[in-house]
Image (cartoon, rainbow, N blue to C red; front, top):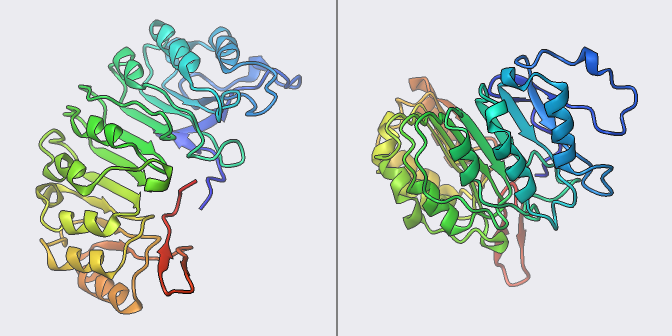
Length: 322
């Protein structure tokens, strides 16, 4: 799967792209009210007319930022070469001008702009420290991503999308104290693109002790999806979840069987396994076991594809890698 469309919303607000420097038809007097949209600020990935920081400076002058509730950082110039240090620095420097900010997403960048595993990232901890009232934070791209253990009192939703999540990032998130967090969504990716975490590194998520309010857990887009599901079969956190998402990865009958034969799942509102490598028999068993109890089950294989070598070895792929 490629990432073919930008975020349509953030923090419950529709996304609106702030006009770029070359848009001579833009009427700055007709911009939406500051609190009504999630403002997307981006520059061209290649041959940008201005740097992201310059676009952000224009935004600060054109919009009453004290009323802005959500920001989406799109592409910065040459994201495949340049880390977003200047982007992060500009946001941190503007924190006093953004007192109402509750949603922030870093790197809403499509495959045609820069592949997810080519996006150069940086240390996102300063953003969480600068905006203690954030309720939703997301970041895309795992290359050089730094996410140390933090404490954030108000964050309710955390999303980290990668084609390969470094183990130190996994451990940093797992070691964070996020008492208000309701939704956690991690795209773990593959070892080919830097995803070197093992199932043991996910143990704090399975225990859930640092996430007392968690009701939606997504550990997905992983080449170790079977091992994750085997661990979830007896994980304490599952009993208090409403949604469990193990989609987009290399999930086979082994992992799905472990889920079905483990602790009860009938309390869930939804079990998401889309993009999988399940047999039709196991897919039918999942639906027949859980749907009568009111669980919404998404077991659609979607575009999951595999290759077989001449020697019979089968290669299966996560949904988003490169």
